[in-house]
Amino acid sequence: MKNPTYYKPVFQTLLSVFLVSVFILFALMEFRHTNKVLTQFETGIKQIAINKTNLYIDNLKSITVNAANKFENESSLHNFNLNNLLLMDSRITNLYIFENNGKVLKSTNNSLSNEQIRQLVIKSSGLHLFDVILSGIYKDEAKYDVISLAIPLGKKVEFKNLVMVIEFRIDQYRNELLEEFLSPNYKIAVFDSLGNTVIWPFDDIDLKSFDRSAETFYADKSRYNVSSNKSDENWQVIVFFKSTNFEFFRAITILFLVFALYICLYELLVEFWGVNTAKTYFENIDFAIFNQINEGVIIANNAGRIIFANEAAHHIFADRKNTLRNVMLKEILGNAGDTSGQQDKSFTFSVLFQDKLLKAIHSPIIKNNKILGSLSVIRTNEENESIDSNVLNTLVESLPQGIVFINKHHDVILANLMAKCYINNLLPGTSIEVVDRELAKIIYNNIDSGLSKRIQLSNNRIYEISPIYDDDGIYLGTLVIILTE
Image 1 (cartoon, rainbow, N blue to C red):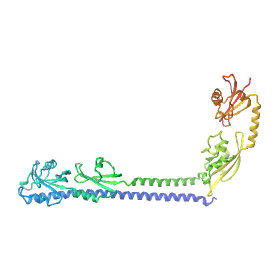
Image 2 (image 1 turned 135 degrees about the vertical axis):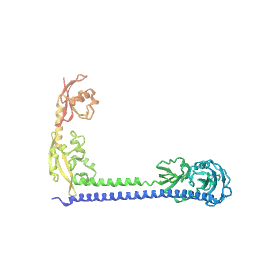
Image 3 (image 1 turned 120 degrees about the horizontal axis):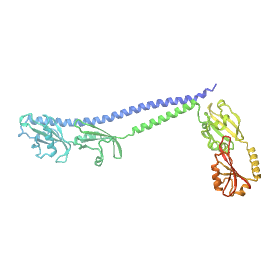
């Protein structure tokens, strides 16, 4: 029976997954709540601006209607002093009595009206009694920003076809809104129905580049989110909210939490399936140290896949695999590498590879009572290899023919004295391309033939070329015999 501590890492990882999942759930709920609060706050700010604008316009309309009633109830057209109506509100700058064709009959300062007021009067001729219409924002003779309201008269017969126009200064409304919305986090702009600027919170140069349909705006080295709405009189109220990057930070936080959950789930699955990296056993060890020993060292995970092999192991199996990383252990060691039936035991075995008998020791890697993988140490019989090499060299040197062996990388590995008499530059490690290009081309073309060929080169010398393969049919090199006459 396995030690109960074997299940401890799985339980800890499962607990981590649960806690991270709960944290993500609460984070999502909190972000949704915060986003809802921010949205409600922004909506409230916009609604306050809209309400104040509507209240301001309604107040001007109410004053205009009261002035018209007072004018009709208390006077005749010719004996009433319009200056008395100026006292009704401090924002009134001028009053006019027009015929509905645009002709001025009376005014408080005896000034002529501008074209904008006359057009407003003509436009009001189609209105019902005491209906009020507004002009756009313009500057009066005193250079104040004003707005005119026109109301048709006619409650008395003598006032029929007459229109009263009252000019109001807008600076009080402008100052009140600018003061109320004076905040580093948001600002307000207002445009009348004709697109004239009523309130603009930034520099005038920024107004030229402002697109009222845009969703973002840059001013004062800051980025603002733009939100607009229409008042009852079609005035456009725009609120600029300074960007807080809330959405960006929310996305980053969620991604970080999801990544943490992914790591926990990955660890849980790895623990559950038992496929963990054996390198965790060597947390504080530099793997380069294994390259300083002569034995081949192979580390594999629980799935039998090689995760590390030192230089000696790569040298031993160089003819079979260019790299051993991510290769299945049994592809290298054959059936001896299939350790699924005895993962928790150490044992020794022998491997016959290219007529060489390899001795190997296989041991499981265990940490926290859990098998992480395996460690295999492979040793070759170097003494026998040295004897074989000496015997081979003596035999090759005693032959009357010239003998040359070129490896799969097309480098000269072996050449006896007789061969060096026929061909120059036959030094170990020299590319056959450098030695003799014509011979090199023939060797290349003969690699996959599997047959020995006798050829005669342009120098009239006869060669026998034989490609060499291992037991798996992998090309090892070419043996070249220089035949004597």
